[in-house]
Amino acid sequence: MDRAVPSSANEEIELYMRTYYSLLRSSGEIQIKSLIETHAGMDSSLHIHARDEFPDMAALVYSSLRLPDCIKDVRLVLLGQSEEVFVKGGFGDVGRWQEVSAPGRRRKWYYDGQHTIAAFIASASDIDDLIPILTAYEIEWNKLNSLMTRTGAFQKIAAVIARGTDLTPAEREELARDLAINLGDFATLENIWANAVVTNLLAIGAARKHFALRLLAGSLVDYHKATQRWWHNIVERVGKLLAGRPVYFVSSNTHSLVNLISGYALSHEQELIDYIGEIQHQDLLREYQAIQAEEVKSRKENFLYYVLKKYCADPENAAACHDKECVEAETGVTYVRSDRYLDVDAQIFELNRIIPEQLDPRLPREGLERLRDSDAVIFNIDYPLGLAAYQILSEVTRNNDQIKGMYVMGKSATLNGRIGDVIIPNVVYDEQSQNTYLFNNCFSARDVAPFLVYGSVLDNQKAISVRGTFLQNRRFVELFYREGYTDIEMESGPYLSATYEMIYPKRYPSNEIVRLYQSDLDVGFLHYATDTPYSKGRNLGAVHPSYYGMDPTYAAALAMLQRILARETGR
Image (cartoon, rainbow, N blue to C red; front, side):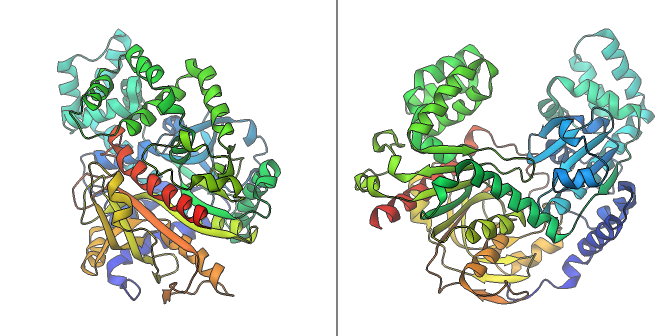
């Protein structure tokens, strides 16, 4: 699309955004209920049944996974960029509140144990993400509350809790009927809420939800300060590893590259298999046996990386996980945990300390002995959300003179593929800047396909960087699809805006076609599909990637690491 989106395609979305930004100018609390009408009016692809009386389970699951469990007790949500902002707002003890987290979205949350929660936000994208999530949660909570009151389900749940036993199959069927959902949806609630499904439903039935929201500071300067403090935290801890050295910037996650480089999971295979036997993961044991017998196409390496993540999450394995970190340090890996600013961890990989024999066996070994003379590092970050990507890359490039490459791996929605596919764009329309970026993506299908088992690789694609996952509707998506756009995500546009400023002596433009072909910077984007918006309910809430999500993740990570190693040995 070589022009801005026609207003007819997104006027309802623009109205919704104008409404909440105008309300957030208030210095006091605003009520989420004042946004419900405009939220429903935009017909979000993630909340297609917002106006209906029956619950939209996909929207409820999506929002629940992106909010901490304590949200059921919360009335007031505070937004701020740093601890100093909260202090100025009269909440000086936020740092002593309980730190909580959500399984589906990285964000710094602090809960006072009563009815207030503080969220640290990194950019305006956090506002565009969080407000629709809270609104959807409140809408769906109150639908369930009404149904439970009307059908008597609240009293039935209270009786089950008083009895002290699990729901019987008959009670599950009756409860699902009372809540106007099917048994599959009820099973999804049991999956995401685990043993708390009955107590959570009791809380929903006990009272209607009325969120209040307060933005303590929202200026661009405040966001820049938060990013600078995030960077200063890194410099204070590992500044010597970055000073004056060539840098390959990677935005991905904090498990892929380190697993490919350290070799820990592969050298502790029996220990990991014994562990899944101990915790009675029969499905994983059967998968491992099928891999060993070559009955399935899955890669054993990806399987072991998945088990390792579960293994390290178990508190009983703390000693082994310390050993894992020691092995990683020996291969030149240094972690920097995020402080109370941006919830974005970082890793530094010293390429001259890589041990070729410990690399994932899918990576070529030829010429790696030359890395002993390299002074370059990989600077990898846990991928940020939306505009925070622009702020982080801008901060990194301002403080490093030798950026040799910029590689981004992230999740996306696909309009023409399937979940598990890898998408490689060379055109990006950015909603934030309204620019269309044309660039040479250093990756093609042949770089990824050898590592991908189940999905397909789609290169030469066109991507849209949207403002938020909820901030799109069917009409908006169809307009772009007619223009050939098939890849929907949030970070490519902001990263390319920062790339523009690495090339040109001015700020990125607005509403232009921007050609970045003349750049010598090696640039690569790889997106793996976790969402198919054209399939009703098939969003990131309803489709929860597990072991099979490792296939596209590691295919992309292998392609990136292979690219970096080849360029550095050639350099």
